[in-house]
Image (cartoon, rainbow, N blue to C red):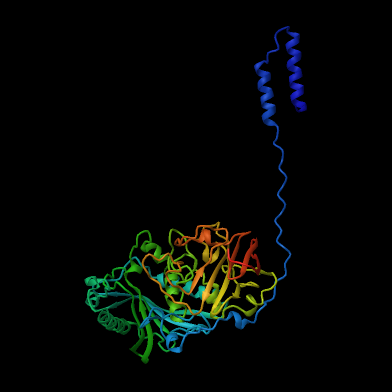
Length: 480
């Protein structure tokens, strides 16, 4: 009992004896004791010792870069196929091995895109798109290109002011792949659809202002009025030839279907307007030769996986592998290892993709044939600010440069090996339930103390720091 309590109870005893009454506790003294007890401070807990990161030095790559720069092993005729194009049983995809596919837009220097808001007689201009809409959204695209290329590439725009109105009824050029329940010759329908798309593209370009610099442009990108209803699919002419005030020019042309200007369940048009920049980047990156749509097709882990947020989550990050493929990393920012040369533990201090620059941005470990394991560090900041604030750590995935890519499939959770992809995320060893769940970022992230064991390699997040991750890479006997 404390000294203060002893003193109070002594007073109580003296009072009781002096009055020659039973030793009852007067109410006022009981209250005083209670007040003293309540006023006594709780013992101060010992402060937690500050978290100290390990004292590591960066390991030097233990394999030649040629081992991590996977070659695209496909025949030249297959490499020419664009993503989704079919040649018999072969499905085309952009290269995910070196060198990257070279398509309509360059992957270095500068690419310039003409962009305009377009309406028709039967789909007039809309007040839902303010005058500043395209400028604000394309400014974000330019910022994104400079950030992830680390200044090696810029996407710039010639923004057409106001509205461009094409003096026709767009319903005369309806594009609806679902009409008639598809009970007709699919090849013939595609031929007809392509012809209509070429007509629409020419009608639009004819109405663009005369003062545009078509010689400097690499592409034309159109954003339809929200009043548009007849184009159920993207209007695209990747090899368009147009008459302009500067003569005949060959430019790819694209404009999205009604999906981009209407509500889609919980994904409202208001949200799509706010994140239109992500749609622009996603589609323009295909023109640059990026395949995207893996790992985690449709997941909210990056802009290549899909445009727009889902359930409030979104990330505009470009995967470490496609950044590496386009040679936007400096060589020293990549730790390269090989299953055969990884004989001792290696220590890599990684900077998150959401942070500009950094000493190490990616780990690549060559395993077998045309496959490599990739490690990237992630944080819920910057281009991933819409992530759950608790989501921080590593994402690990496997690349197959000779893989098959399918996307836009029904019932595709995005990371199911039954739905062929060029890359798949790999769960931490501690995750026992690996049933494919869409956008399973929370369970896929490798958090502090967790490991991923795959193809004879063990990858452990030894320490999650405020700004960097400490990653241990070592040989392993078996997969988890």
